[in-house]
Length: 211
Ligand code: VGL
Ligand code: ZN
Image (cartoon, rainbow, N blue to C red; front, side, top):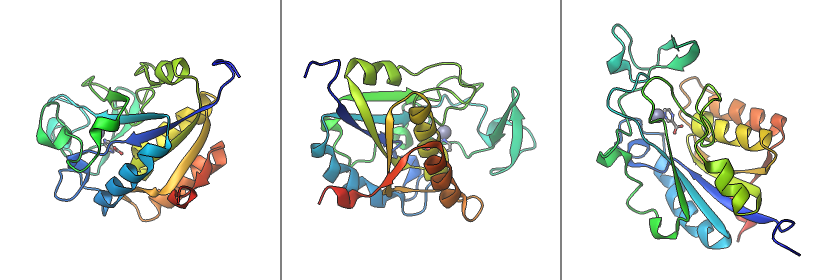
């Protein structure tokens, strides 16, 4: 089988960063529980990619940068629906660093996103307007990746939109459901996100697939 027909499998670790776990600025409930799962699964994949939320301090998704808005409120940001978030994952801060326990030496590629102040970027592939690509698609294609296995934080935001873009781009897309945790601003958001990923064509799998 030549390289153009080979099917390589990539693990995509979404936003396993300090601000999304424990006492982080945008802590996802029980978010830290997925770090050991990531470390355990890494050796099973030929390609391992991590995304990293990477905002400038003046990012316009931060409630603190929007007069009159409080965290959790929805507003329009340059024509796109946006949730006002706490200041998080500011470039160069400890909150933006990968979780200390994550086996970062095993990562083949890191994708930084959300660096343009005027637009958010939940997906690891494109900004929320679907305009600017991060380079992840090109990286995966050059690595002859056919299947992507996605896990991380948060189920209802960055995991969801990364998976939906992966399906749309034609990757066979698998969600490692128990490798994800969600924000659940509204109760049920994570479950609805999983349903949306399934409906779009992602297959839902579990870490038990690699015993
Ligand atoms: C995320 C909200 C804001 C995520 C990132 O990683 O899911 N959520 N920025
Ligand atoms: Zn963010």
